[in-house]
Image 1 (spheres, one colour):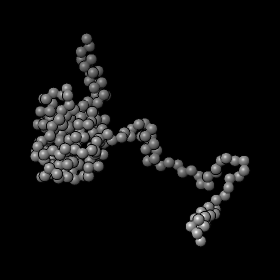
Image 2 (tube, rainbow, N blue to C red):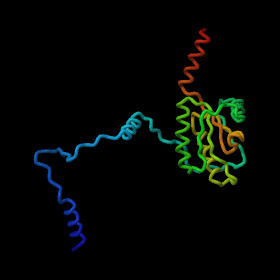
Image 3 (cartoon, rainbow, N blue to C red):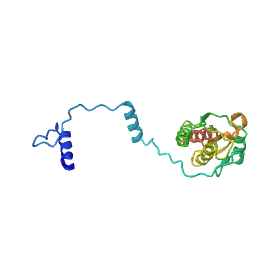
Image 4 (cartoon, rainbow, N blue to C red):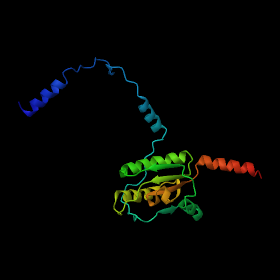
Length: 198
């Protein structure tokens, strides 16, 4: 049997129970009733249609490694140095924390993105990211710490960040200050107008 004959035989066997459509119809009748979508499928569909499923914009390109001993600090333009000073000294209560110790980088990237977005949506202002530090600059913990420092600066929601105090993990953890949500800013404006009507 040649290769072509064998192929034809396999094709014929596979198509043995296929019946042609009746003449004069262009519709295919399904033999089984269509299954209803699951709750999870419906939720994913609604989320995608509502535009809630954002793509993760955090860069996974090469990052320059930080020294494992050095504290990190960042403030966005327009943020007063006093805010960073207070943040560095643990002056803001930690409202939520994310533990990324010993997690793969891809998971750190995914979890950090979700955590910062959720925290901002729930109007949290000060959060803590626990990432570890490592004894060597090229340790996994320090690589993760270096990426996390870079990623935090890519969020518009992040106003400032600084290495934590020893009681919260020292350079193995980072305090993050988030900007007020639009809702919170609107409430502040309304409150201010009520107090100062003129």
